[in-house]
Length: 151
Image 1 (spheres, rainbow, N blue to C red):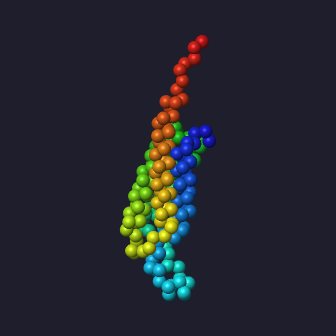
Image 2 (tube, rainbow, N blue to C red):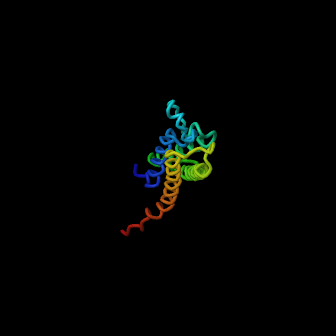
Image 3 (spheres, rainbow, N blue to C red):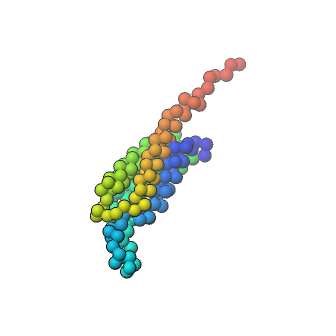
């Protein structure tokens, strides 16, 4: 656990939050119709229902952030053929941009719900945490160097 950085923790927690938030309501496709409420119909859609491809990117971003933290905690980052933090950063940045696009241009011209905004924040947390982890990994070798002991 000593290899786990603050950036890894932020990215992994954001990934977990994103996975949970994807089950919340993201859009209201009923337009606030009172007849649907009276009948008891659920007119909201979560990320799984509203998206056809963006939800896959969101899941990959969340899993990449979690995997980067698990690899860092296990000390296996040096053995990985590709550092996991840049992958998590790229997917987190792509997720953030895709969710931002859907905030500005919602599916079916639907109303925006809380889950959409929380998904945006969680995606941004993955990107920011992964960026921090990459910077901490670059700065780490410099801080560990010590001058040789004099005998």
